Amino acid sequence: MSQKSEVVEHQISVEDEWNFSKEEERNLRTLEEDLPDMTKPKIRRVTHILRNNESLKRFFEPNFVAIGPLHHSKHPDSRLYKAEKAKLKLAAMFVEGSGTTKEALYHKIKEELTSLKACYGSKEIETWNDYQLAFIFLVDGCALLRFIDCAANDKLTDLVFKTDLLTFAKLDLFLLENQLPYQLLQLLISSCSSTRVKELNKSIEDFISKNVVSLAGRQKQEQNTTEAQESQQQNPASADFQQPQEQQPAHLLALLREKMIFEVKSAERPAETFQRFLEAYIFRERKPRHYGHSFRNIKELKERGIRLRMSKTSSIKDVSFSRAILNFCFASLNVPPITVDDSTGPKFMNLIAFEMSYDFENKFEVTSYISFLDYLIDREEDVRELSDSGVLQNELGSDKDVADLFNTISKNLVPDPEAYSEVKLAIQEHCNCALATYVVQLYYTYFSSPWSFLAFVGAILGLFFQAIQSYYKVYGKESATN
Image (cartoon, rainbow, N blue to C red; front, side, top):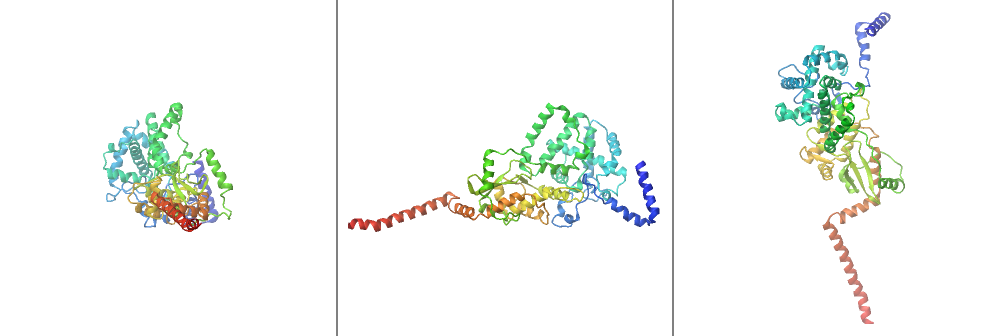
């Protein structure tokens, strides 16, 4: 109260000193309102740069359910209104198994309402009063946790909803405008019994792991779960540890992003050390180094002797380039595996929109990753090469559908110029090596398949026998004469 009164007194003194009109005071006050808080990005609408693009607009609109106040509708004619009853049912199911009451949960939300409102841009929630917001947070928060708990444990059939509606609901959970503060989810979880606290936190971890847009991320889920369980058994207190608010992600979309961009640290093997020595001192480029590139797709890389391989982790930062040991003509581009399905476009575009939030300080990791994939994917043939190498698993449709998707979502992006710069430079230096290109073309022409190899051997044998025949024609007659 004392701080607020000081602010009011200060404002009054300024008004008296400068004698501004109310409209002028209101205009000046917007300067403070629009000052971004860089500690944690607020939940707000997608920037108009993306939303006004007709080809991208569909990625940001919820199809089935509104979560949070931004798309919440009280009108029965709204296409999202039908999901309100479903949310009430899910919320009731959550409260029933939480070990607490709806009154206790609602009271806790009201106590933290000021802090929860601060997670949103002020203009995003100005149409709702405190009572309405508290109830939205209660219903949507409980419903979301119940859905996540069932999805993580493969019990979606317990929700008694149609399969198509469940699919749409899963797509809607990672829309930027459909996010709830992670602080709210932890507030609701902490109000449950100790057993449920552990179960719900584990469900969130498993749910995010299942939704990482990487095949490797999904395959490693069971391994990570086992390691977490072993860690909890060795240190039971860690299971009850709650992350401080300032270290918590802003929301589920932010948590998904964290799971995709983790740093990769691996011990270098002796063979790799020797390879780096060769690259640094024997095969190094003599020309000035630059970050431009002329390669356009995977097909061109293959023609230059660069093969695609799957990275060892699911981190989108785990992209590397390496030459074959003792063979400077061939090289490998290691790319993290990715599964492409109906959720890939919405997830990536909302992650990109999140990175474009003006109050979110970041290095545009996801944006840079999509731009890098756009360098590789130009046509459906490139998608086929990715699939054949095991890097991409296509669950979307045809190879053309995948190529069109990445060509669409990569338009007008501004990536970090330093992202993957060393990899791009290494690729360009390899492509600039004329001798390597000649040897690779020779290999693909005569040795890439058994039939071309046999044809090559046949041609060599034909030349050999023709030479022998010519020799005997010339020297055979001389010896007979003598």
